[in-house]
Length: 424
Image 1 (spheres, helix red, strand yellow):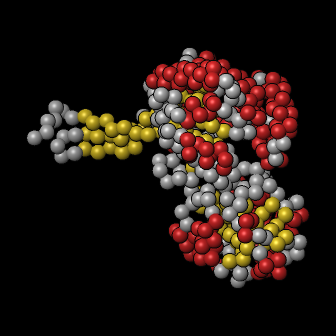
Image 2 (image 1 turned 180 degrees about the horizontal axis):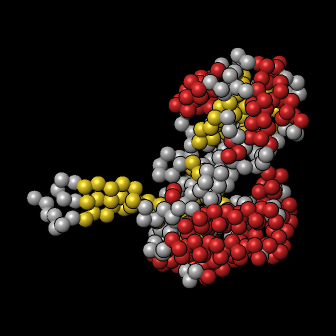
Image 3 (image 1 turned 90 degrees about the horizontal axis):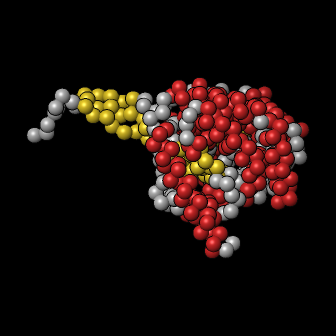
């Protein structure tokens, strides 16, 4: 890349930032009804663009194959009519969800005559950097709009054409509601210099960055960003099958948590079995093997079930995103907790048990963003949580945690009123 190209991209991105900042000022006071109208119109436009979107996606799929993307990455990239309809329904679900802007979080009066309200307010301009999932374009754009934020979206090079087509539908929605088209902008280049400019904050225009992708992407964002970020590194999700687990439920949950979609961050990557109940191991392993999953287990798991591949140390704490799962025997719930603390990524963990006290211990002693009981980890998703959609799952502890929906994309301000109160 020449210096002139770098300068051109830098100038372009600064203009994107200025436009986003101007749009954010308008969105902050846009009525809920107008935002709903924009999102519903975008859903209609998305449905009308199915042939063009499938054609654009075919170009991306061919590009992804040329790049040698893994099967998991290709699964994330591919669109079909059902997935496009799911995106449209996601836009409508976000439209129908409660508008967080202006919500009174707390309200109180002071003896000195002050009436104080803590009220939700947009963050401002949100930069979203993502990899192969084109549907993030729709989810992120919708959630930013719903929460009164302007969005700058930078999709992966492999999803460039699909993201562009989806973005066009979002712009149609903005236009239909008489909102600035710059409220949701898609970076119009694959050049990596645009990512660097966005991470730099675009001269103060960007308020927060949300990365959604693999470890290398998130680590780069964490290293280079000059603005706050909401991020998670890996989805190393655990399923602990307790001695008090319903055996059939354990089988069903293990197969679904791992095999429904192996390439999502909520897919289970490690099975933990209670050493006191070795009879639970073989049925789970057999069901996973029948579903096409390779089970890599420690010596105890190998002794308890057939067709188990010996696990290595590297298999634990690893995000496979594939038809592979690690497995280990542990000493009850406390052994499971110790393992998860050592190898987990603070994303999602599930316990399968009928014992309330054991479940309570699991919930109290672990601090992952999402803890589940007798529930597939594949439900670790903002849409399934009733948020309409999500930008990602945040595993940090500051501001946003778990699925990032519209509410998580707000901050708050204090509104203080009195009848002429003066301070002595």
